[in-house]
Every structure is written in C-alpha cells, then in structure tokens.
Length: 213
Image 1: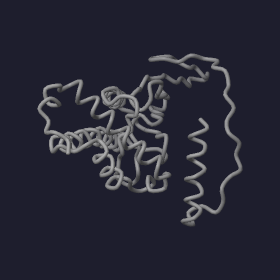
Image 2: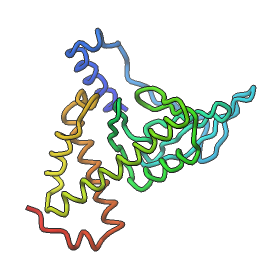
Image 3: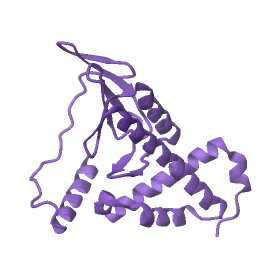
C-alpha cells in the first residue's frame, strides 16, 4: 500500500508540472483494518430495499480481484479486471498475476452482459452495446500483446529487449505520467507473465525458438 501511495504522489506532482491539476491533496497513508466480511464467487450482499450486490471472482490482474454486480441496475463494477483503459481506445493488458485467469475474467464479464460497466479508472461505460465493445477491446488487447511477445521471441529477442520496446511503444496517454521506473517494472512483469503463459501452452515452441542475441 505504501508503494502505491508513493507512486500516486509522484504521478500527481507530474500532473502539476504539466498544469493539468493545480495542487496535490494532503493525504496520509491508509491504516490497515480488519476484514469483517469474507467474499467469494456468488457471494450476495443484500443492502435492503431490493438492492443486492453479487460478487464475481476475477483474478488475473490480482489473485484476490473481485467484481461487484449490482443486479437490479445491471451495473458491473469491474475494478481493474478489464485491463487499463486510456481513452479513447487504448488498452494496456494488466494481468500482473495470471494471463489465463485474466482471459477467463473477461469472458465472465461478457457473459454477465451488463448495461453499465464501472471501471477502476476513467469512469463508467454506459449502454449494453458500448459495454460489449469495450470488453471486446480489452480481450483483443490481450491477444495482440501475446502475438507481439510471441513474434519477438521467435525473432530471438531477449526479455530485456522486449521490455524496452513495449515501454517505449505502448506507454501512451495517462501511462506517460507514471514514474518511469514503475512503468518499466510493470511492462517487464507483463512480458514475464506472457512468457509464463506461452511456456505452459506451448513447450515445443519455446524449445524451437531461435537463440537469444
């Protein structure tokens, strides 16, 4: 939590330098608190007066990531499970934990078919067709990144070289305000998780890949 807090502070200062915000709020780091309710797949939180929230496990971004579905309103709060979205149309996959689970989580969200999708970043997507398009873009971003990494590995690129390219090529939009060291660290982790996935599904490919430079 402290690391995230420091990263947010650095990003806020970068936004101030660009003149995009006028001041940085005075905040203190969050204090840990005890867990009152353990939630898991299909847990229901009844708030009364017909307001029910159903929880959906959506690991991939993180092992404990949950989505919350407000049933009556057909509204899904997806946290970061749908990827990091930068308007108007750029997605960075963010399966820091597991690529396959991230794919499954997106497929779950598509099956729910919500009318409104509330993201962890950049607000809400409204309208069933628009939400469908949005989730499709998030899923396609994973496929595109897998293909990108696979092609580079087949060409004999090292993990470090791939990380350098993706950091320079795909750090767009709001990602440009991330601290450079954090940006590269996260891209490297994404490349690593992709390679782990490819190793699981295609050992023969890895054995036949060209030698690294």
